[in-house]
Length: 299
Ligand code: SF4
Ligand code: SF4
Image (tube, rainbow, N blue to C red; front, side):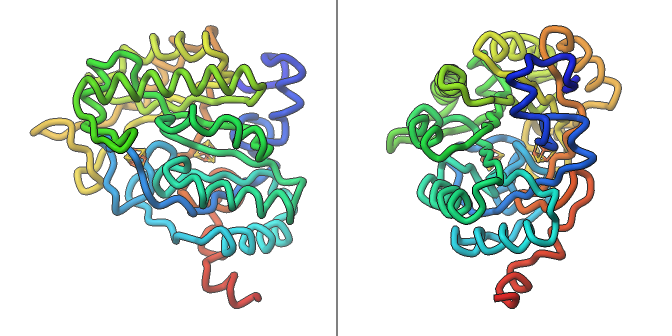
């Protein structure tokens, strides 16, 4: 578990006020997401583009998209209203790094206007190796990479296509490129001292057994926390794994897998799969209080 005793002290210092990374902090510190990143560069079988990126978020939620300028305004309003707000994340509604100009502009503006707020970024990892220097320069503290498979045969069942280097790839080729880029990005960030968490979506009969291998691979490349999240299955949200639909895991199946990985590395168990415009303590969503309309009215 993410408690002080389990982590080296230099890592604990970096995560103790981060509500996602420290189980203790999530009762006391708040985070917010700003939805500045609409596009995505891959297709996951569990995603419906009408809704937020399902790698971090609850399916079926539509966040209000913001420009970087609107986003920084919102951050300043929220930081005044909720002083425990310590972390700003960009996690969609598409992929943060498929929208690098908007994502990094937002971080730059926030770092200038509110230098105490910690910055974090979530990505599917495809574009990650191209942005390592910018991430370091932007003083981003934490990165989350969603890695659902390291075996391209399994990955091909999860990702029908990716768009990479001006080209669309499908099947095993697509999955192989994605896996290579994710693991390479993770290694590069670890080498530069950026804390990395890995998210995995547990999909029964597709990657459930395999996630133990994913756990070992990401640990070996420096991830400090693994967050295995259940697939939340609802056909209208876009779970297209087969003709008969795809169920999510039961709470017991999820716990058994988390237990199997525990001991090998820290497991996150309090993730609430927040929306791309979430505001507040984890589990307490105050996004409706801070809609774009209201923020803009506040001047
Ligand atoms: Fe959807 Fe996120 Fe996958 Fe992109 S990375 S297809 S937004 S779930
Ligand atoms: Fe934290 Fe999980 Fe919410 Fe992201 S989705 S802000 S990791 S609790």
